[in-house]
Picture 1 (tube, rainbow, N blue to C red):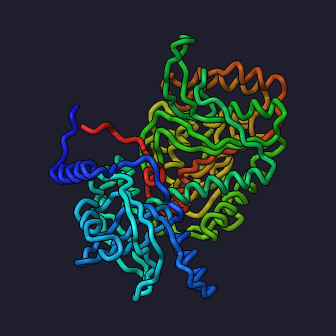
Picture 2 (spheres, rainbow, N blue to C red):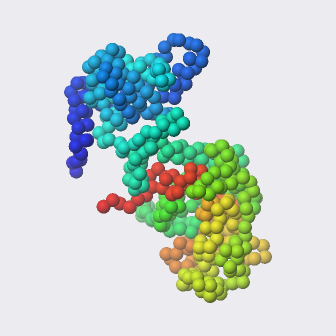
Picture 3 (tube, rainbow, N blue to C red):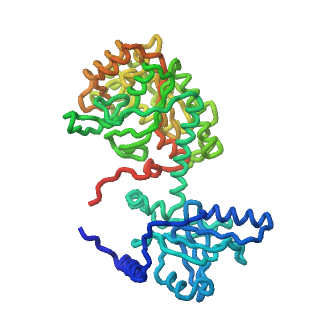
Length: 505
C-alpha cells in the first residue's frame, strides 16, 4: 500500500529532498551531543557562581519546538528529555546562507543538533549562540498543535491534542506534545522502583515465572488461549503468578515476589485493561493480618519516595495513606450499606430471596458468593473512599484462601479499597492439599465452564502442595491502579503507554 501524504507532508518531503540535493543527510547515522539542556544550564550557572568567565561550549540536540526569524537573527527553542533551551542563530556567526537554510528547510518537530557557546541574554535566559547546526531527523508529519503559557515565570506547554481515542492510538504524538503525560510515566517508573526497593529491603526475592502456562489459575478471570505448534498443545497467557510463586515456597524460598504482566480476557473499563501490570508476593509463616500491616507500610513507603507525602487528591477526593488504614469486616460493611446481614443467609436461595424482598435484582442461579460480590459492588465498594481493608470473604469466591477458624464458609481474605475501587487482594493461603483438591473439584462441579470463578484442576500444583507447603500470606496489587492514584488519572488507559483499543474502521 502506498502512503498518501497530505499537502503539508508533501511540502516537508520536498524540503527533505532539497536537503539531500545539497548533500545534507536528513537522517545521519551519528549525533555528537555533549550536554542535555539541563546539564548545559547547570554547568553555565556553576561557572557564573564561581566567577569563571571562560566560555562554555556545548553541542545540544533535541526536537525543534519554536522558531522566531527576525531578519538577520533567529531565535529558536529545542526540547530534550530534560526540558527546553533557547538557540540564537545570527547571520554574522553562521553566514547568511546557513541562516536562510535553517529558516527555509527546518520545521517544528525536526530533531536537530547545534553547537556553540552558552551566554545569558538581556532578558536573563541562558541561550546557545549557534556556530554550527545539522539535521538529525526530519519530521514529515507535523506534531499536533500545542500552545505555550507563562505560569509562575515558567513556560508550560499544553497540548491541543485532547481526543482520548487519538491520544491512546498515537501515544508517541501524545508524549511528544504533552509534558504532563510524560510526567505520568516517569511517576509510573518511580512507583516500580519504590516497590522493588521496599520488598528487597524486607528480604523478598524477585523472581520470574512463566507467562505461557499449560493450566491457568490463581485468579477469577477468563484466560487468553494460544497454541504451541511444536508441542501440539494449547497454552494460556497467565491470569496470575500465584500458583507458580507458591510452588517456590515449597522449594524453600520464604519470601518471593514478581512484578509483571497478567492477561485477562475480560471487559475494558476505567479500571480494567486486558493486559496489566501486577505485583504479587508470598510470605512464609505470615497470615493475612501481617500482610495488612506490610501493605500499609509498603504503600506509605511508595508515597514517600515517589510524591514525598502520604496525602493526595484523587478525582476530587482527599486521600490519606497514613498508617493505619481503616479495617472493616465485609459482613458489617454490607449490613451498614445494603442493610443485609449475610450471616443470616447461609444459602444462595435465602440470600437471593432477601435481595428480591428489598427490591434488588440478584442474578438468577448465582452462587451465594457471587450474590455477596454483587452486593459488595453495588452498595459497599463505592463508599470505600479512604484506604480500607475489607476482610473475611465467602469461601466459594476465594478457593485458594484458608477458612476462618470456626467458620468454614468464610476465609481469611482481605481486599484493599481506595477511591471506591479495589487496589489489592490478599489471603492467608490455603496449604492443605486435601482441602485444596476438594475445592478444585467443588469449583468444577458448581460452576459452568465459561464462568470466570471456575478454577481448573491443577494436578502439578497439588503435587507441589503434597510435598509440604509452609503456611503463608499472599498478596496481589494492580500497579496500574496505584499509579492512577498517585497521578490523579481517571482511567487506567492514562497510565498504560499503549492500552488496548478496538480496531479502527
